[in-house]
Image (cartoon, rainbow, N blue to C red; front, side, top):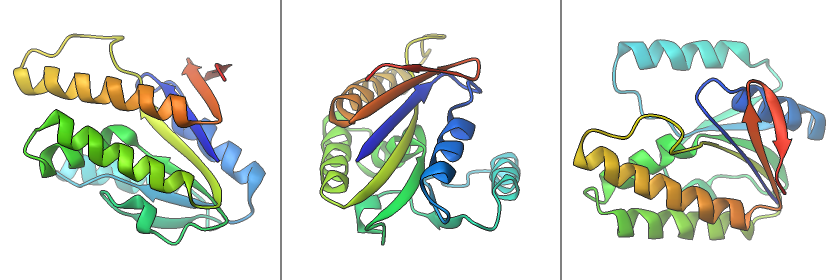
Length: 167
């Protein structure tokens, strides 16, 4: 089962998803898709690690998430934005190829027994990207979010820490 949790930056997506996972499992998995680019990002990732308790199993993987041992587990996948960034860069900023790779991974996850709470940033609610690559990525994330929301059995939009149940 896929549960899609979307919202803006600092809307409470990750906290909400983690609380949901802990209600569903005593030993959930946290799948981090981040690639560490600089010291600030490394510090932010460490803060996230420190916030989670010992009941969490951590798996870090940039793509190919369907290959992780997630069968019959409850997993929080955080987040689509970073996952897409990895795919976008791996496919030389080719939107079609990155989107197809993402769809293949989502389709593979739907075949795995388990509950996957997938977090994504909602796109298009803020500033427009100033660069061509930024606009391409915005398009990619918008289409990926729509695909994921359509595949999900539940969809939740977070606003200021409050969940709005869309599906």
